[in-house]
Image (tube, rainbow, N blue to C red):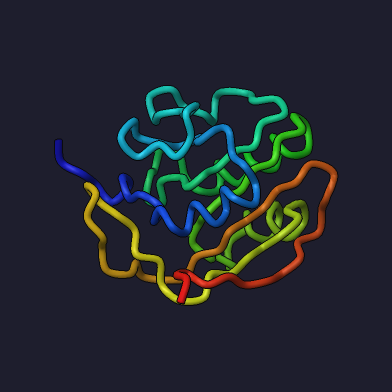
Length: 157
């Protein structure tokens, strides 16, 4: 099967640092071969149309999907945090000029962690050169709003 840019996999060491902190139990945007949690949702299952109560959700959504744009994933994360009492941690491009960044992330996320350095995503299990642009980890915690800004290293030194 050919891989597309929407099939990029989060680097394992980067994910594990976040998992150690948050203990995820659902990967909301996964391929079966790249899923980070035992419970995962594929594109065909469409997490955007589902509700998950009291979960600890990892989310690295597809970045170039016209049917399911990042803005919809951010809104979904906001709703799951505020209405469904789920923790949602997202890895997305740092698009600080977008409406969703200002309307949802800055207003209702609890943390924005800007990634220092380039992440080397995997495609078909092979490391890729750093993607264009910067990334942020967005944390939506139930009951905690007003994003605190910090940074984290792309790779451990």
